[in-house]
View 1 (cartoon, rainbow, N blue to C red):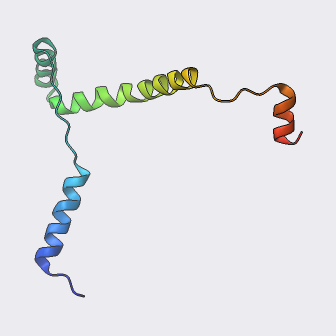
View 2: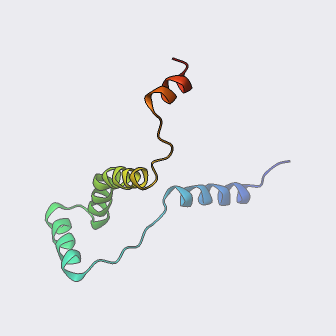
View 3: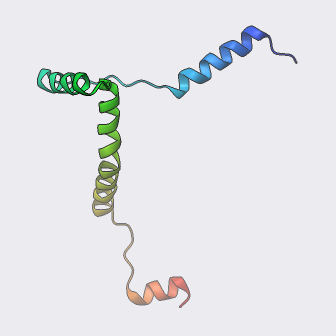
Length: 89
């Protein structure tokens, strides 16, 4: 079944929209002003710096919350003998 040019255009536009998801965040006035000043001084966008800050701290936050989950839900604990038996040693 052939796809019309208009359908292909809509599919392409939809694909692009999915690739560029947006996030809206609220900042207090002081942080907004600092971000605005930094952007003006460096010629970069506020979005650039917000993205950089998120990327910089995301891995640390993931590690922290995964560690908290492991501490709160440790799962089954094995004695040395049980571990050897489970591993076939």
